[in-house]
Length: 208
Length: 164
Image (cartoon, rainbow over all chains, first blue to last red; front, top):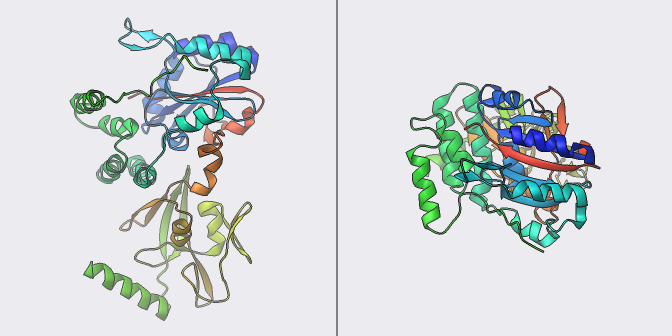
């Protein structure tokens, strides 16, 4: 997050805004200090209902979307990081340079996707995955109202309806023994990766 | 299943007799939490007063039907139908029937009277087919509402992350 802040300071003069949205049912208490510690001056939102993931069909964090001056999506659904962490254990140094290129060149940037590529990159939802959205929302409502039993019931329902959502799984595990990056998460991730899938939506830096 | 049928049968009987033990209900849709003081008791469907419809899902009941911007779903209002009934002079609109017509997903906790609605496909086509960024309105940390549409004329890098 401090890295995004420095990138923001570098680029903000070019009619560029970062909107950073924490997908955190725990709200300010869970996510607020991360924004504060980085002294962010870009637009910061704590999204307790994961509304942005729901609206943009995103299933994991971090994810990035490029939106141009007219509100058109230029890239979507990528596992985005500001930089590499721990010698490449996770993260990437490849994303920020393409953001910089886009901010400078706009539609002429070679990293801007054409309309069909954008369309193809939007995650398609099954009817069950569509139902997972209101189920998760209902679980969040109960969580906020301190009814953990019902929160668990509807969060579990959401995960069953949309097993592709890491957000649903890990938000729920956050409040269970083992935590959000514990054995259950590791097992699920290994299962997906050993079947040839990828945990993060891949970055496709080279195209056009 | 047998139980289910008898409940539905009972509900139909209540509708016919016009029993109006109107009950309070909570509706979740997008960021909103709508408390309704009165809905028509029904085992499977959510019936609201027409004046509550807009608070629930932005639709407005007009003579030509239930309308959202240019979209109007025809609703006969001079007789009872699956979408609209009148009981003891009070009109009731069937929100779940409309949701079914629009293929809008929902999940209900019947015991607590809470109805959680998903997105309407009809409002999603410009995103899914056109790659246009869906607008949103969320409270920013500084206490100001953040609307994506307020950033027209700027490039926006929208990032999601989480503390967990």
